[in-house]
Image (cartoon, rainbow, N blue to C red; front, top):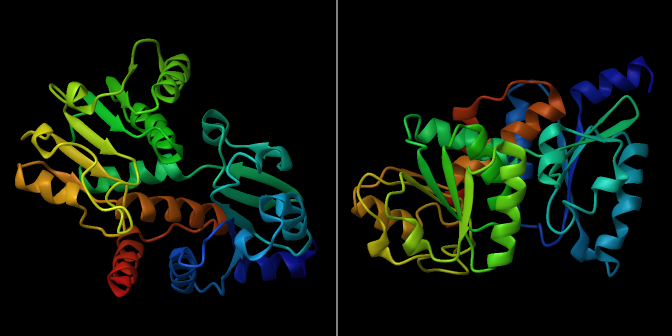
Length: 293
């Protein structure tokens, strides 16, 4: 890429999202709006695997095409966060530790994989609950989002993390991996959130329960207790049943918008090299969600 192309890519970045069923994503609007405040003419293209019978089998060709067409980067979502790894030239330490990539940056002919899910949760969590006690944290749900958050909360200094999942083997395997990476004895696993919560200082909810299409509570309301902080990952709706019950019981809360905005900010900064305005992105995100209600 010559100087003219370099200058064009810097001021007119081309970004995409590869995933299945992504037509309702808020990411294009968030990225393009923030870019406009920096004088950038960013175009964000949805690349929906559901629009082709080949599905995820297209991934190698799509990564190659993005390189050829001069994309600055890509966001990666379900079902490609693991499948994309062999197609990349290198990984950030965070992506390597998690074994998953949600952001690819193209620089100097190389494709580098990053993961902004965990760091995105941490950004939002620290803005909402800066004084949260991380003595004993319960994480409900150890899928993709939960796994990323588990790494992040340990990096923030959680003294003990209890992973709770109905799939006991998955929780145990993640606990073993986290103990190996972050220090023996810091993480344990359980299948019963009611057993895990007494004595906990905080609860992170990382299952789909509470989404508009899957309403309800992910745990008995009476298991919540005053003094417990609650961090929600679900962001549509922003006010889930869990958050309502937690507030009613005197819990400090952080809604799912924090992670959605945080991971988007992380990706934006990787793509553009510009520092995003967190308050501005958050306000825009909340307007977008309200418009969909």
